[in-house]
Length: 211
Length: 316
Image 1 (cartoon, helix red, strand yellow):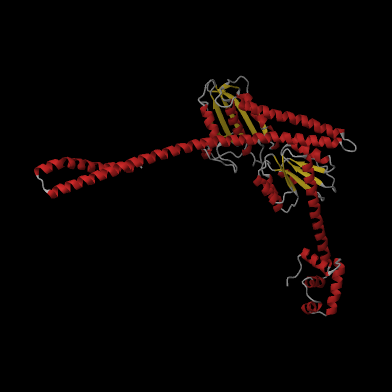
Image 2: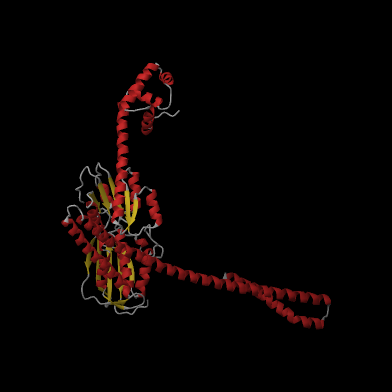
C-alpha cells in the first residue's frame, strides 16, 4: 500500500479491511508525526517487509479470511514479536481476555477515542523499543562471548557457577595463575564491572554452568 | 408403545371375557350345585379377574397419559426450535447491522480527531485537514445509506405484503455488502433486465433471503486464490408471470450429493454458523409460493436459484 515509511523512525502498521477506517487511522497517526503503513488484509501485511525500527500493529479483529485473534497467534508462532493493538466493532469479554492474555497492548472498541488509540500506540512502540534494546544487548553479548578463546569461554562458565580459582584450576588441569589470567581477560573482554555483572551476562547467554 | 398396549389388550380381553362369563355362571352354579368348595373357587376366580381387569385399565390410562405428555413436549420443542431459528437470524442480522454502522462511525470519529490535530499543529496543515473533513462527509453518507437500507428492510416487516421490485431489492442488498465485496476483491456482475413483473411478498423477508444467499456466496470464495472471485446475479422472467433470480459464485462449490442437504436445518460448512440460514431462506421462499434450489454453477462454484411467482398473495 503506501510504503513511504521512514526507514529509521518508529512505524505503525494498520490492518483493517475497511478502506475508510484505514484512511482515517492513517491520517490520525500521521498527524502526530508517526510513520504509517496500511494493509487491507493479514496476508498483505505478511508480504510487507518489517523495518529495522520500533513498530506496532493496529489490527482489526474481524478480517476476511483469518480472524485477528488467529493472526495474533500465527505471528507469535513465526517469531514476529510486534506489539498489537486490537480494534473491533463488537468486542466481547472472552475475546478481549484472550487477546490480552496473548500479549495484546490494548483492546479498543470502534468508534475509539483518539487519545486512547495514540496512547496505546505510544505504549506499544515503547514496548517494542525495549524489546529491541534487549535483543540488541543480547546480540552484542553473544558477539563478545564469541570473541573469547575456548579456554576463556570455559572459565566464564565455571566462574559464574561460583567455583573458586583453585577448583577451576583443578577442573581444567591448569595452574591457578593461568586461571587468574583467563579470568582477567574474560572480565576485560566482556566489559564486566564485577562478578555479579558477569553472572548476569552468563544468565542472559544461558551459558552458566549448573552446579 | 402402541404395539405393547395392543398386546396387553389381546392377552387380557379373553381373560376379562372369561371372568364375565364365570361371574354370570356363579348364581346358576350356586342354584344347581351348592358345593361350598366349588363356590369358593368361582368367587376366587371372579376376584382375580376383577383385579386383572383393574390393572389393565390403570395401565392403559397411564400409557395414554404418558403418550399425550410426550406429544406435547415434542410440540413444545418444535416451537422452541422455530423460535431459536428466528432469534439466530435476528442476532446475525443485528450483528451485521451494528458492524456496518460502526465502521463509518469509527472512520468519522478518527477523521474528525485527525482534522483537529492537523489544524492545531504549530503550522496547521490545511490540505490534510480538508482531506479528513471530506472523508467525514463521505462516511456520514455511507452510514446514512446503511440506515436507509435497514429501514426499508423493516418498514414492511412481519406479514405485510407489498409489491416488490426484485431488481431494486437485489441492488439494495448488493449496496449493503459493497464494502465486503470490495475488500474481498470480488467482481460483481449483474444482469437485471427492466420490465420484470413485480412479486407480491414481504420485502423484509425477501431481502433477508437474498442477503443470506449473497453472504453465503461471498464467504464461499474466501479460500479462492487461484481464480478470479466472481459473483454473478441475474434476474429473468420465469414460468409465464414469475421471476427467477440466480446467484452464482466462483467459490468452492459443493458435492452434488450434498445439494439437497444444504437446506437441512443445522447443516453447515462454516466454523461459526448454526446451519440455519438456508433452511430459513427456503421456508421463506416457499411461504411466498416460490422455490429455492442449488446446483453446480457455470462459474465453478454454486448456483442458487430463487423462483418467485408474481402477483400471488402468499401464505406467510
